[in-house]
Length: 400
Ligand code: SF4
Image (cartoon, rainbow, N blue to C red; front, side, top):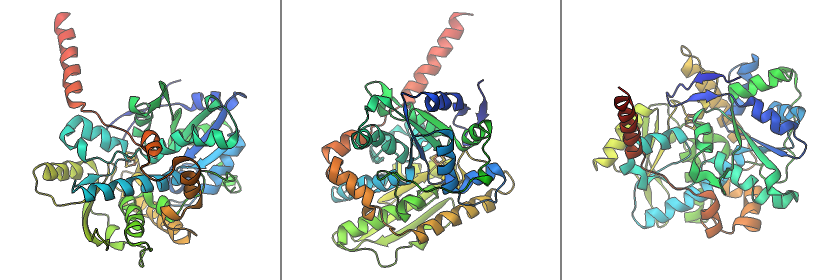
């Protein structure tokens, strides 16, 4: 049956799609591909009574295998690809003195901008979110590697986020009328699905990814799940592109606070010099910042927006505590930073599977192929919304 839960961002209801996911898993003609977001691995254990911030990445991989998923991939890989695309895009916009650039990986922010501030849309990065990058590459590059017909692939995405369902259905993110992401399960739904199949995460031995494509990630990809993480990941790669060497102090602690809006200046050296950046989480702070930008009162090159306070580690599809929100989010966030610290590779451009994707399939970042597959466009929906309200009103008055 249909189960509708309320999105804490206030954006959307949650359509339960566990049945659809199981239909695909049980269909022998379908090749199921799962991806799960950076924040999921540090929040999902709580669904099974494990302490907040426990990293259950290996148990999620094991659970996916147990329910019969064919290929288990990592959205963190796609976060690295996003950095390659968005970082390159930002550099060319800086050269053209088009500023600021807003990040585009949070669909609740995209909805908010399209509906409330369409004037801001030209400032949004055109790079697709990690969910959509992974799904598109899973239906183009992966079938070539696996030697299967792309029409047999179905992508199931496990997200901390209700707005990701809405994103997957965007007409701009379909090819030949079909979505690239076939099913989006929130962490709550994925937990429900595992329980239906009699799986208790606590009792599963962790398992490693085994795909030679699209499963490895850098520490930079891992930190996407928390506020400030996309910014930090991007600056690590942009610094290397500009200077031809890695940043010395890789942890940009000036970007890591928890205030609603944070600002910093970071010296990228070379032809770029110092850049002014801002990170905002929560839609109240976002509204204030957007109005400042539109009024010409803000002086930023790059702005990261996450609609959920804390970022995806406290996303609207995860368990949330009304009373202990900050301690929970902080524990999840600390685990994410530990994943980065422990990672063999800590910059997106040094991820060997990302390098292989560009070498074998995409060419350069922002190439014509990359643009076609990994970028998107936005739409002024303010007028559409007003129009719809008017139509509804006309219908009501006509029937009176
Ligand atoms: Fe989804 Fe919230 Fe993350 Fe935005 S910040 S992508 S709404 S979980």
